[in-house]
Image 1 (tube, rainbow, N blue to C red):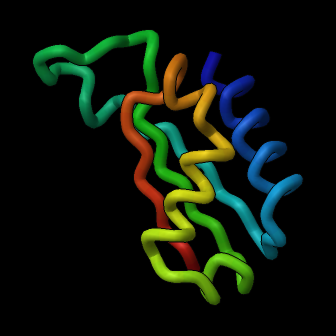
Image 2 (image 1 turned 180 degrees about the vertical axis):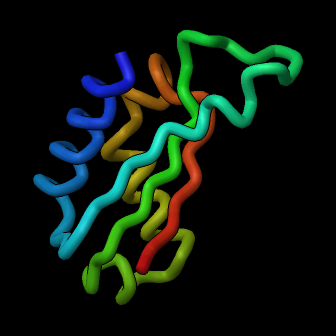
Length: 85
């Protein structure tokens, strides 16, 4: 369920990273006719406003987010677009 996934993502990110704002969007509809699309996995756009992440290199901030969401990446997320604001 996408709403459960969004809640989990927000909860995990905000408990591990100092954030001013988190926005999670389901972009799966953009990919529904693509070959190999798995309707049980979602395409997520994650926008995080965070001074902590802004102070890191893009690679390190993305690694941190992927590590936090590793379980969701295996089971529920097909692609993750990360914007750090």
